[in-house]
Amino acid sequence: MNTTLLGVIIVAILAFVLVLLRKQTESGSLVTGRILELYSKDLTALAKAGKLDPVIGRKHEIYRVIEILSRRTKNNPVLIGKSGVGKTAIVEELANELAHGNVPEILKSKRILALDLSGLVAGTKYRGEFEKRLKTLVDEIIAAQRHIILFIDEIHTLAEAGEASGAIDAADILKPALARGELQVIGATTMEEYQKYVEKDQTLERRFQPIIVEEPTPDQTLGILKGLRAKYEAYHHVKYSDQILEAIVLLAHKHLKERVFPDKAIDIMDEAGSRVHLTQVESGKGDQFVGEVTLEDLRLIVDNLVELPQKESPIKTTNK
Image (cartoon, rainbow, N blue to C red; front, side):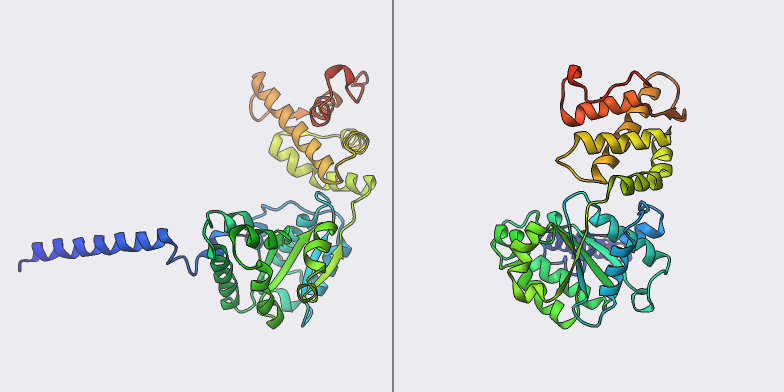
């Protein structure tokens, strides 16, 4: 057989093998070892790259998380608080501390991976698919020899996810690894959902240590906004004066009563910066021009957020 023909045959065989591998991967039989990579976000890596916002305050909650993670047993904290109080921000600040080595020796080799639960559930049409994915994910974490801390936001949805996919309760998949100390988790949920899904399951509840995350006060929220100011100014190419930050807190407190600090104040701050930047670009001032956020900008933003007609605007702007 001549060399050219042999080469053609080898290439054909390799192409055939690649087609088979691609079909197996698409069918899900070769995803083992990749579930964690596909359905999580490495918060520690993001922290090292400077991509996580700083957290102002919350020292007590962060210390409690570190304290619980450092325990020998029952070392799984669950942050409990209303949506928007900053539960995820606490975990991100812990990732910042890990990235800079500002943690006890026992935690220095660990990474925090945030689970993409909606992605994990997506596409699991048939009975057992979600269960298989979750089991594979747990196996991958166990293989990492306790160097991974899994962050599960809205941890109560694990039970709902299992029910929706026809699988067994997802919590039952986690319990053995949690009991053996092979899986370490930080959870986050509301008090209502914690009582409904976690507290009633005594086996699961024993594995977690609750940390109550209270809504910050207006003064504390102002401190948070001042801590975030530089990042938002750099992102939007705008300036926020102290007066504007104080007005943001006041307006959020007065007109967005159904929402909580700091989330509602940060939303106003972010949207006002976006509005000012877009306005200056459209006016021809250029993308790099630094604009000033005004009370008029805040008025328009709050009008949109509370869905009031212009004539019922919640704030006056005569003293711009």
